[in-house]
Length: 281
Image 1: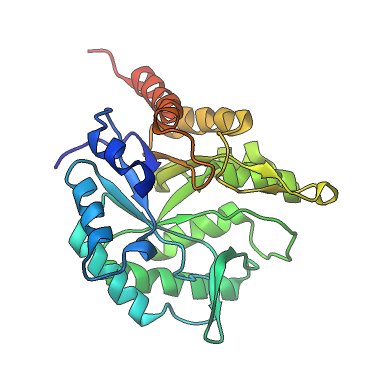
Image 2: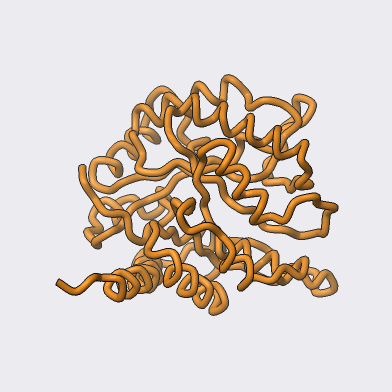
């Protein structure tokens, strides 16, 4: 199936019928593979039905690339089996950790960007790419507290690309959230990232922390995309060209028509840049 990836949506079974019937140019769907690491059954059958109509992306959340040890071998086998079965258009994972001492935390935890961590993450990316037999895009995390780092984040990501051949997933909302929480310069971050390494872009909504005293923004995926995120998406796309761009919405789901309309705004950004970059005959 040939299908140019434009703006996509995170797939939710809540709107499965609408997703199967949708026929918007460039539309694709992304899922967390951890929800489908099974040998069969209705959940996987539904995903295969979507895959028959639209391209899929697998967006991992539990490989624990930044953890103290190698990726869990059982997880790698199941992940690879799912990828072989679905042949997704893209696969991605997070620059984060979630496993330690045999325990698993259902969260994407930050890591200090030391040279030791660089070696460890690069080794785990190598294991992941070897198991999947394909290039994987690595996503920049959201930050909620200042840690002691030896490496600038963009430089750390670029070095991972150089050492492993991986790609990058630029989550623009994560950049905006981190800018508010730890004083990151969001515009400088967006301007510095190597466009040649970017395989995918994410946008999403965020919200203020329930405790006003914290002053934090939370990468909640439960609201429309914020104006600042749209501005930086336009800036990034104008510089590096259109990339597959995913609208993430994980809770407080609006009607599918509203999601498609917001996704259409992202598609319009991609289309406008594509038209501007066309070389006259």
